[in-house]
Length: 127
Image 1 (cartoon, helix red, strand yellow):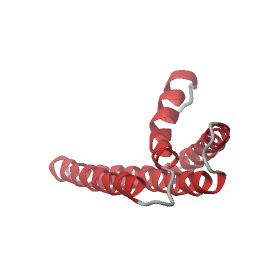
Image 2 (image 1 turned 180 degrees about the vertical axis):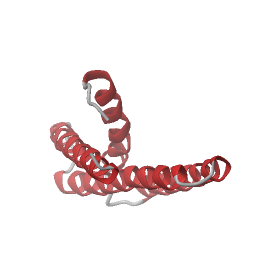
Image 3 (image 1 turned 120 degrees about the horizontal axis):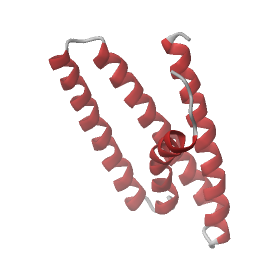
């Protein structure tokens, strides 16, 4: 399988898993008494950022493997700092903006890690 095809397949798998976790989170938060409109909007913002975060990880890794080791490590570190700086801004926005449900906006930020752990623990795929 071509490398880009495998990356696209993994990204689609991540998108599907994150969409399912978002739907479950929406149901749980609304049943817990959160406003449906604010919760749904906040979950979608969080989901969009989590997908962007995962895509940035992929791009950083792709860029790093094409470079010499020293420069590749620098690219990975720079990407790491950029992603976590942006994550801090997203979390700050979730806390500060009055029309955002903070828990719903921050919750999807954990979905990529949960899905990666799930994938490594319960699935055996070649590649």
